[in-house]
Length: 445
Image 1 (cartoon, rainbow, N blue to C red):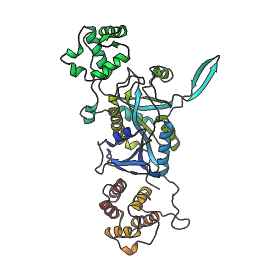
Image 2: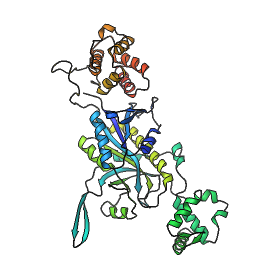
Image 3: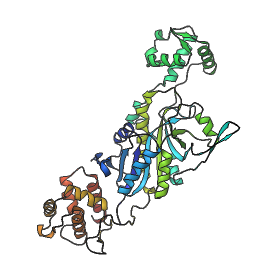
Image 4: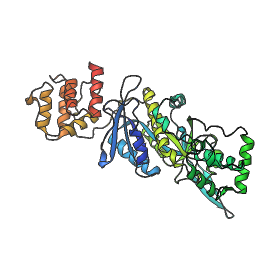
């Protein structure tokens, strides 16, 4: 029996990973600890508080490139190294215009690959026939997603841009249609803080000619706006959290028709991205829930508003970790029988510790890394209240620490709590040692 990692959280890109490391709500004092993991892959570990008082251990990393293959490969590498109880993903996505706003977070209640299927050609006409293979989190997780709300007092919410570029463009059009120079308006700096970008986009849309002359298309847009909003443009919608289907595809999307097409087969779809369905399939194979939160950074067309990218990545990370903390009770049982990676110390006999937590493989690895030399192990054992002579000359660090941990759990003078406290004094930021000390203190006082 071994302990398992609570959550493996995958990001597609480094900037999304950086926003995960910026999350501090519920973060235990040791914070995020970044280090090389399997095959030198950079990972970061942290423990978060939960309503039960049991720490939630999260490991995160990024895949270096977008796409299903990269995300699944990195997740597989880390799962092989250490079993998990939950697979998660956070980052940014394209959102469905008119249904979500820039910066909004979408929790996936369904995942599928929209480009999976068959292409046929009939009389010169090409048709795509999709195969919708859905991956869904358990219903209890979806219910918890629907319960997530964000206090307007959260400091990170203040980093969301107040006015999208499209809102500023519409304000310029209305001002020009009324015969006014927008730059002379007394609220100019408040209502159009991104003047240069907004004007450039209006010209790209063919709604405006330089210098500040409305085209026919621009005037038509202004007439429509005035008809719909005679009292002035409404304030952009506030931040929201949605629970809806998210579609995965192989390519970056700049297609205003993508959501109308997807809605013909999945009418409630709100997001499009490039990785999550692969993690859905991986989680299904491993029998663990897959929880995905993506925030809207664009609408899947060529009209990007890059000011929302960093906020969207942060919002998705904040909401996902809030969900994981509040739903830790839904995680599968943390105890699983697996074949030991290392050979037993004696033929056909694995050490069977008396501790209720079993042989914590992750802790054995951590102690072996911190104290690989027998002399270091003896010094730690002595500081914990034992005798130097009790530490055998076992050259392989993991075998040595398996033996010492078995001794501590089977009645030696050095008890697990004392041993872990002594180790934590040497490595106060080691999340594995801290987590197992808390478990031992909880179980044995």
